[in-house]
Amino acid sequence: MFLSQPTLVHKELDLEYVYTDHDICLKGPTRLGFFSFYCNDEKESVYCPDKSSLRYLDLPNPLYINSLQGYDPNANYRHKKSKNKNLLRWILENETIVRNFTYDFISNDGVLKDIMTSSYNDFDWNICAVKIRGKIVLARNTVLNRIASFEKEIQIDARSEMDNKSLYVATNLQRLITKNNNHPEFASWKEYYCFYGVFHSNIGSHGIIHAGYLDCVESQKEMDKPFDEMKFVLIKKHNSLKLSYSSLQAYVWWSLATLAGVDKIIHAKCEQDFRVKNTNQLIVSRMLPRERQKQLFTTLNLVLDFVKSIVKVENQYYNFYFNCTNRKLTGNMRMEPNDNIIPSWFIDGQLPKP
Image 1: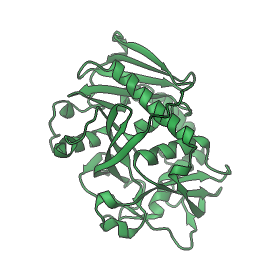
Image 2 (image 1 turned 180 degrees about the horizontal axis):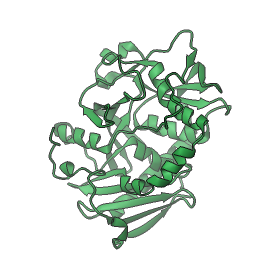
Image 3 (image 1 turned 45 degrees about the vertical axis):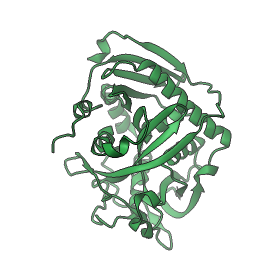
Image 4 (image 1 turned 90 degrees about the vertical axis):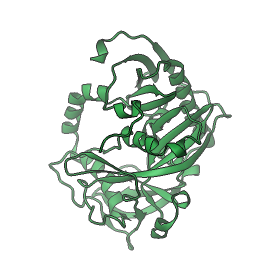
């Protein structure tokens, strides 16, 4: 196991107090392309280089939704995430597009969001970094996740029914207020599918190619437009036990929307029985004070600087662990190669076999 390997590099970055650099801003995102992703009946990730999973907003009128439709009390629901390999595959398939942009990092918006909100979030995270052909790939560290899998299973089993329902509703609500022209039969949690955009952004001295989940376009008429011209919205909800969404939710939603170039969020308040009676639009640029926006950008730039200062050796796995208790990020070189984190076909520069 990699945990027994000697640590060749060990550095720390303190993110408890991040002093805002007002000169740091995000330039972009520029839309490069897209792909679809879904889980088949065997729970395997399926990549599609098309818009087959693209959805459009279709709010019922009058609005009165039972967002627990289809809920199974015997199931433990989880967030399903696109694996980093989908973005890596897109990059190999679209080298003629990618070569027109200067970049030194490859990641997905979920990882970048975790980094940006490090000063505020309430969970630890692990990411790995590998330099391949001069570009640093950032990905969730699934090896450490598996080491902690037993503890996570206990947490999932002990999760309250209310929490389980809330997790189900977070995805089911999106299905109930959107439609898909290509696969109208996809109507359950089991048949889970997503549409992703691929973007290029600059922050500080860093260029990033990244992929982000795009919930839906704002109306059916957007479906016929070129991808570059489509207007997307994100769909978010909070439960009625709170008067409004939390400050942490604001940081997370703002980060995801900004990274994906989305201007509006459709926000729903769920009643105690998880029925939705109204929604409102959140203007992303107004969700956080300008100072907070700059602080999140500063944090991302600091961490990318930190990662680049450590990741020097090509094809060597590095681990970065963030402790939310002391707000310290630790970076070290101590991992063995793992195909589940960075597939060998990407390291070899070859598309995976069908």
